[in-house]
Amino acid sequence: MPKVLLSGSGGQLGLCLAELLPRRGHEVVALSKGELDVVDFGGVRLALEDHAPDVVVNAAAYTNVDGCETEAELAYRVNALGPRNLAQICEDLGCDLLHVSTNYVFDGESTRPYEPFDTPNPISVYGRTKLAGEEYVRQLTNRWYVVRSAGVYGRGHNFVRTMLRQGAERDVLKVKDDEFISPTYAADLAEGIVGVIEGRHYGLYHLTNSGSCSWYEFAKEIFSLAGVDVEVVPVPGSEYPLPAARPANGVLSALGSPELRHWREALEDYLRREKVT
Image 1 (cartoon, rainbow, N blue to C red):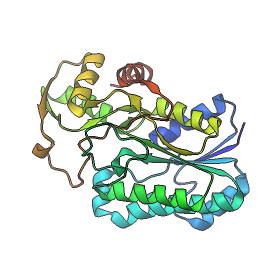
Image 2 (image 1 turned 120 degrees about the vertical axis):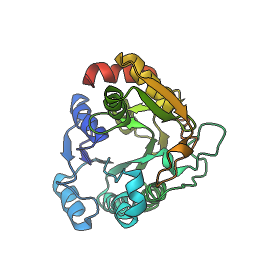
Image 3 (image 1 turned 180 degrees about the vertical axis):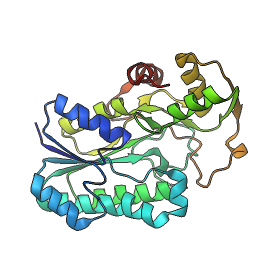
Image 4 (image 1 turned 90 degrees about the vertical axis):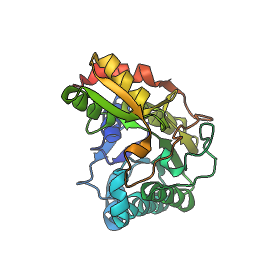
């Protein structure tokens, strides 16, 4: 089994990968942001030379979509220059690189789910910096996997926990019904990523739980499965303008990628396993 170095091991996806990889027989070096800053070229080189991995999985990112609008330089350093550093050093040292990206590289105007080789057109700083990271990876090394996902939730701050917290505090919640995604459980995304690594077929992948819904429908299902009695009112996103634009259609097609289970089944499993309240 290949030895894996994991960057961003403290995030929702990183935590799941750090647990799953050893169970699948991989030797793992899991490094949090404090242990490996992907923006530091010299630090990245030292870490990769020291640990000599067969595969690097980059789960490090600046994911505060609205924060990216005001901290564009920081977003570019983490989301673009970090992957550039990893790609360049992986190519030098002869190891594979799997980089995690996002549905936000698309503008959301398509009438169907986005396929891997549809033309990106990001509409936010977050999306632009993540696309730049993808491009660096694809241009600077020949041994790459890029995995795009969407609506990821797991341990830590996420939409599911936010809804349950607000549902306990309020009688009525307004949730946008004109933005569509495939909510994705981080544990399932981790399974898909490990499958990609083990399959050894380089290229571009879309990994999300199957099916899709609006954020409103997602919220309704969260409360239904959790047994929380709260009124959820559908509203257009224009009622709650945010600094960063979001793609109205954020659904990714799994064409050519491993299929993950339906988002409702994954959500039920998450609520049961994580005992989220």
